[in-house]
Amino acid sequence: MKMTIRVKLLLIILIANTALVLAIYIANKVAFEKSFTAYLENTARSQLQNVVTQVAQTYARHGSLDWVYRGSEEWDSIVHHFYGLSEGERPRDRLQTRPPPRPRERNEAGPRRRDGPPPRLNNKKRLLIKDPQGNIIMGTAQSKQTSLWFPVYQSDHLPEPKRHKIIAYLGVEQSGFVRNEFDQLFAEQQRKQFIVIALVALLVTVIIAVPFSKYMVNPIVLLRRNAKTLAQGNYDARVMIASKDELGLLARDMNRLADTLAQNQIARQQWIADISHELRTPIAVIRAELEGMIDGVIASEPEQLMSLNEEIQRLTRLVDDLHQLSLSDRGALTYNMGKENLYDLLARTFAKRSHQIEKQHFNFALLCDEHIEIECDEQRLSQLFDNLLQNTLRYTDSTTEQPGNIQVQVTQQAEKITICWQDSAPSVKPEQLDKLFDRLYRVEEARDRKTGGSGLGLAICQSIVAAHNGKISADLSELGGLAIIIELKR
Image 1: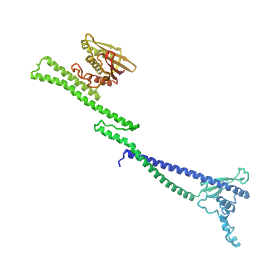
Image 2: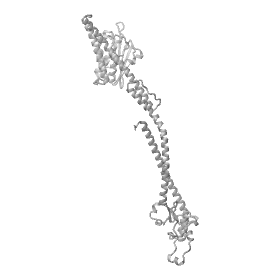
Image 3: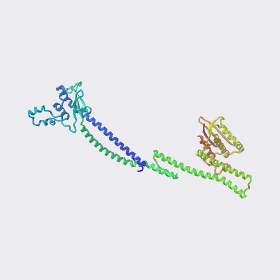
Image 4: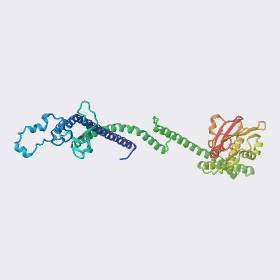
């Protein structure tokens, strides 16, 4: 039989209930035996108390315990009184109905001995007595450990007894035969009751556990079925579990997983389509110009060759950016961390592009403390700033009459450094801010690729910042354009 969760749950419930029934049975048996033993002891004490006075009176007449022996008339009377027999029930009365023996027979046989105590019936106990020193007079040596003893004082027969001198100890011994017989009867009754209780409990458990286990396992079956569907590539499958327990939380997590997988599939398909489109465009341009030169339609002049070279360089940059992003996704990019001066990194970036900045009539302001140091990879952080600068130079309006503005402000705090990179108009729509870091995303789809980029610059910036355990986000700039906020740990 396959050990499913439902079967395991049923077994656990059955085992737990069986153990509970056994525990109740054992506890009830122990409690009953203790209570019954206490009852027997209290009964024995009450019976002994009834004959204490008679023993004290007999002791007062004789002055000793010499009258206690098997066949003694006084002792037989006490024993019969203890057993609760009437005068007509005593063996002495039955013996007196026989004809009296002839005097000669009495002389030959010696003094006639009375019969001992009446034979022990199944519900009788044996009466015992010992002297103050603990010597057994009536009984056996084993009676010292197996009997309940009660002291007899010399003045117990007086109206106002003064208990200062013990003359004897009365005891009662439970018959081993009677106790064993009762135990067997009790055990048999308890066993029968236990079997009935166990069967009823197990039956009720099964009646309750079967639908309960189905109720508990049914969400797991739905989750398993949904997981199989997701594994087959169908990301539209959803599991509907309304409960708020752990299974309900797992169902909601699985639905979120399905949403994520569906989004990733769409993104992957879009990513492949965008890459093919980006690669096809420069290749188509190069192919058209080369075919024109081959057919003689386009002259093989230096200007045409330079145009081909620009397309090849643009294609090379795109391939390099794609390769860098793939390395970043795989975690294969190496970072050589060290202490670097942040002001020097920014200054070198602007110095590198100073000719282009002047040519496009940009004004820039670098607001940064010259002594700020940061733990970073110099090459990657320089690439980050260069990508941001190229993005600004490419998309920000700037003319001789109305120059564009670039402002980089660095603020430092106890645990982080914030870099705010701002430029002037044009800006982007607020709903487009979150998409700027998506790969191959352009604000204007019809933008000329000769002036626009590949759409991978900000995505590369995001991967570099993430490798430095930092955060990057986009916002509207106070200068009228776009603001890129970078937070790096010190």
